[in-house]
Amino acid sequence: AQTVTQSQPEMSVQEAETVTLSCTYDTSENNYYLFWYKQPPSRQMILVIRQEAYKQQNATENRFSVNFQKAAKSFSLKISDSQLGDTAMYFCAFMSYNAGNMLTFGGGTRLMVKP
Amino acid sequence: GAGVSQSPSNKVTEKGKDVELRCDPISGHTALYWYRQRLGQGLEFLIYFQGNSAPDKSGLPSDRFSAERTGESVSTLTIQRTQQEDSAVYLCASSPGQPNQPQHFGDGTRLSIL
View: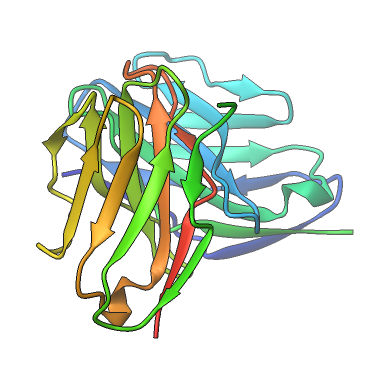
């Protein structure tokens, strides 16, 4: 079974600065996907960014980028130029390529962006 | 529809009652997932459907929980004889079914057991 660990329950950052959220996972598989989801108070889970494990290049989506270290089983999210709207819970998630595509989530990091 | 729709948005019921939660996935999505999110925690996988069949029911916490899907569309999650520990947000997601395609989530049903 896979496990996903987010070691930072809460973080804060000043508006316009950069913050990095940590995520580690454990798996014996070689083919899988990793995701970061954002959950604002509205409850909806919003996909922020995803990474295919077979790709060495780190994924980037505008102000969001990841640092994927496959050997270390680490998948951190960097948010640049933080905005007030980035305030939310952030969840790291793992999906096996071969196991029905359900997501295994970490416990989440609550991010507060301060003006 | 434009997105995954769940109903009701909120449900309050007494301990011991049965509840039904509904999920309308995005049209054409063959895969449908149910997750549970307890207060302040991450999401726990409950069950998933590929078409109308459920290959993996391993996440269902007890035999009080069941789910079905009909017409490769709507799904219903039923909790019988509810207990206080069932209080949580129940989230549904759908996807086209391919591994490289992300899951799209609904807004969830907040279930409160008195």
